[in-house]
Image 1 (cartoon, rainbow over the protein chains, first blue to last red):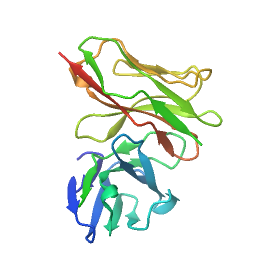
Image 2: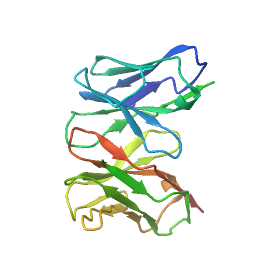
Image 3: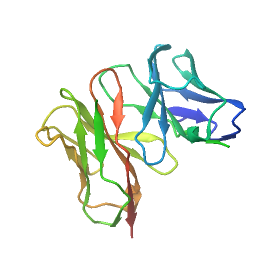
Amino acid sequence: ETGVTQTPRHLVMGMTNKKSLKCEQHLGHNAMYWYKQSAKKPLELMFVYNFKEQTENNSVPSRFSPECPNSSHLFLHLHTLQPEDSALYLCASSQDWGENGELFFGEGSRLTVL
Amino acid sequence: GNSVTQMEGPVTLSEEAFLTINCTYTATGYPSLFWYVQYPGEGLQLLLKATKADDKGSNKGFEATYRKETTSFHLEKGSVQVSDSAVYFCALSDHRGNKLTFGTGTQLKVEL
């Protein structure tokens, strides 16, 4: 199994739908992250969890709701999204919320909001 | 705040050509610097890093030197291959946790 697995790889949803993105890491890491990758823009950090506790919420709209039930799983619940939310959503993990800077990324979930 | 500026792509090179992708940064203090690479259809993976001034990070034939005086961390490779085609991201960490600030990415296309 790859280190960080994201499902689904592709998702198309309407503005009134509710869906969830799932991330699972098999590396024994303690910190997990959600990033948003849009064309021509830097990666945007959305949320950070360390030992299941949220340590960072980078002013993300409430239509994005993260959940971290344990150190290996991270969800991003989506509801009433806007077309501008269409992007690649990347999950990452690291050993600890520390100074290393080495993150391990999943392949991403490509989201299209109609 | 922190920021990272990369050269815009795409950069198109012939195989065995010399590669330079420029990266400059703005940060308080002494950040750590990173290059991440994203191959088609994959997530980002760490390519190399440098944690203090004058350090040189290297991996898979790629190199980058932390230049504090010019606030730069340019990526170089002496002879690129088709398999190096990817998007390259420069990033910095200001040591407040693993909060990385990324550049916009530079797409590299290597042709035969």
